[in-house]
Length: 199
Length: 199
DNA sequence: TACAGTAGTGAACATTCGTTCAGTCGTGGA
DNA sequence: TCCACGACTGAACGAATGTTCACTACTGTA
Image (tube, rainbow over all chains, first blue to last red; front, side, top):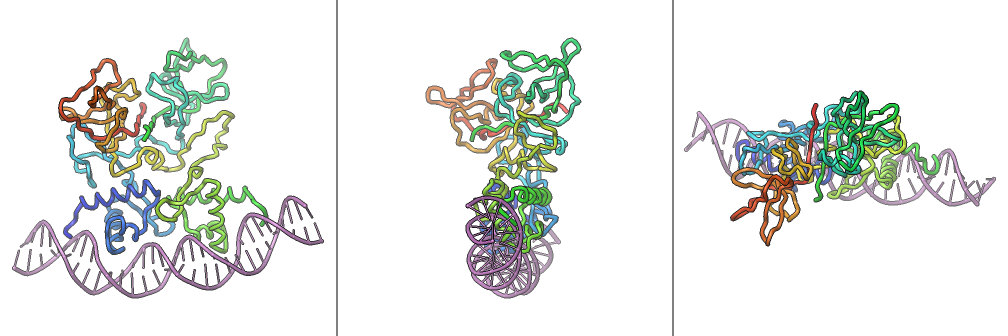
């Protein structure tokens, strides 16, 4: 072959990502060789050296096994200005890269994913089956979407102010505004949303 | 030891989770034995049999390596003074980079994130500023949400069938149905959606 | 045209891996 | 008290693992 060839490695990286998505582990050198069509494990070893130098893989702190690096989970982010043309890129030549988890989760230790049930927020584009990203806090402001605890149940509503008191406002005309007597317990504030469409 | 001892296995599972959180991989039998204080690998093997029967681990589809099972990421959430009626929530444990990503992305090498502009799909709960997960493919079915290329621009619409021809249907009454003359170029199919609220 | 740098080859090596199996130990039920 | 069962031991085995090294093939540059 030849001098450094980013395209080829980008293709290899793609296959490793696909393998990882399916098997949730990084294959052995032997299997990498099979995947890529190498005839020797040494080639796989060198490939991993290159990819780890680029930040896609790391060594496990415990033993010397491979684990995914941060960039391993980056996805290409289409620039709307960009025309068709496959975004196969290893170095983000122009297309940006996007980390889903980093985008959604700022404080992992205080973040909880909560599945949405019901359609009381459907007019706000929050559907049954969606998963909302919730940061656990009691400090919420009017206008926030919050997960509150009402009658021992979790409820997702907009926190609103009515006559100086907090109320829970659904985004669906078929549902009534909840005016809690006594104290309103806030579980957390919605900071994101994830939806998966059927495959 | 004695007959089945759930407590002991719960403790073992805890250590395996800790190891996984740190190393992002399931240790070998040898290392499991060290972790748990076993003197033989066979004990580790049997432990994994028990835990996999309980749904905490699975075998990788490819080879016979262990991967985390469904219940592996499940959290007791007993520590947060939870009450009855708690929704089943997924707590993103420390630096769990790949939870959301794994949920949304099945074929990394063919997956692109595309920012949404405009409100032509607002009645389907897709807002301006959302980011959709798109799998690049030309094979789309009627009913899919697709990113198509119309007049050199990306457009997100529902692919629909009208009189035997494909059309692009917005989900907003203010927008017209797009009936492409000639060929309709599909960029990809929407398989997921990500939204972030103010921060 | 010659050279340097890079990707991949092919074989060797010690190490670690998972599996198997006979056997030990302790507890709960009969 | 006895016994069955499940957790764990300890050693053996072949298969798979990562590493090393000399080597070939190719490309871009001087």
